Figure 1 (cartoon, rainbow, N blue to C red):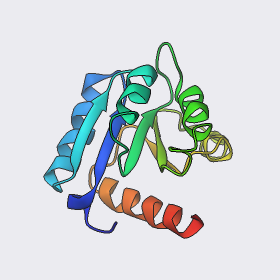
Figure 2 (cartoon, rainbow, N blue to C red; figure 1 turned 90 degrees about the horizontal axis):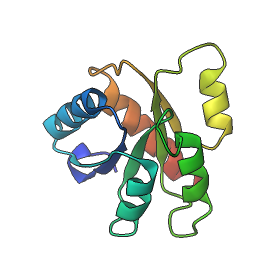
Figure 3 (cartoon, helix red, strand yellow; figure 1 turned 30 degrees about the horizontal axis):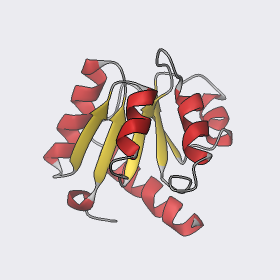
Figure 4 (cartoon, one colour; figure 1 turned 180 degrees about the vertical axis):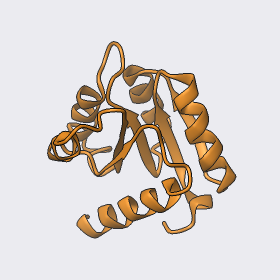
Length: 131
């Protein structure tokens, strides 16, 4: 999946500003984006269409990114879906904790718009290698 124009990205974040930045960058690269404002909305949307990857905020009301990841990994249809944490948790050890939880990648906020697509490309390549 090297060409972003082939990507279908589901952004799961309750902050419109964060969503706007991600959408702008991804759509500039011709990726198709959809947005879920909550973990439950994400699960509902996954029942309709499975995207190329998920970009998931860790801190969301109702269902955290960790809880959402657990629900995704427990469903056989979604188990291998690449899930990338996009979070302001950027303290020492946070990236390791996120990766140990089972996320396929980690992008810190504020998002580096210049490297976002390259970072996601690397995460997708790594996840395809592990399948």
